[in-house]
Length: 250
Length: 250
Image (cartoon, rainbow over all chains, first blue to last red; front, side, top):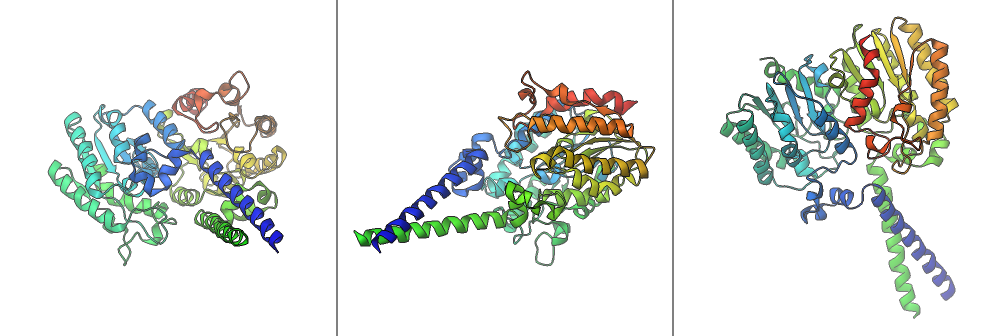
């Protein structure tokens, strides 16, 4: 009896060791500490998220950032700046406008956008459509008030260094909580959008409310627009393009 | 003593259960069986990979596919068709050509391209730049000879249904094995490229050798072009664009 229990204990401990080794190995393979910082909210709160200025989507973020840094922006261009929601849109085709430059990068935050801003605004583009902030909530665990500070810094730099640019502040879109695995909530998103509206008034830039056009009856992202509760399908992009078409053309 | 061992056994078994629960939960959250099929080579070989016609990159693949399905292609268009390596290029900007349509989707394979082909070739586009196959090796564990069969079917359909289209068969790019976590090898990639050259001759389509222009002295993807051994940074995309510019313009 005692022997059986000892054998079982040995087996069980070996299994645990194997599981722990597998876990460490997988985390190491996926980027080590940076990966952990992205997935574990406690580490985020300890400040580990600042290691890469808000960009955890290795290697995609770095590859795309290096490509965009080499592609020039002109004074006649219309820039779409943001995270994955902007990145994944084929804007030139959606809006039939070859002057559009997609400067979205999946996983980006207000911190990442602030960092990339010089490349965007030094050429003083004609128009700038901005949608950013949901990854600050979801990946960095920042509060709407915190995010607003970085957002204000973005707007202040644009106004100072590219005063002719027509800036459009697009609301952050809602999520569909039962599908979405991140930690951004619709109440935080609503709070952030309220702040963005105030910032738009303060800077005298137009605020585009997309949020209310993507809601279902329960005030969450309509499930017809998404399969993961945050990213968008083709119908959603056409809807978005229809809503901003007048601002892109004007 | 016996009691201590029993307590330890209980604790260890609880930990086993917790690890197993965590593993199952993570797999479920990431897409269940399809996710497993992508990550575990044995399951691939049992044919489970065919569940989604080669598209495992949920939800990105499905979202992008639905968007591209809504965006029309015209007879004057230049289509770039492929996987992530094509998807991640800002081709309109890289080649300063607004007629280019990016129809790359991250994680796609020859099977996925064959499935998407009707949308691409029914409008009979002017030109078609094709780069596909590395994910057949890496994610599906297919042999170069297997891949060639699907590739031939793609070319046969294009020639039959869009005979005026100028098709450019781009070689598959090398990988940098010590950085790359997937299972495609450079010897398989070389074998695949040899077959692609034969197919190009057979169909009388030009074959564009990009492969040799991205190699280092050890015949692997030059580390100056990548940080993960397979995907490309900005310098790589500019190099690629320079190499195909004459074919895009002509």
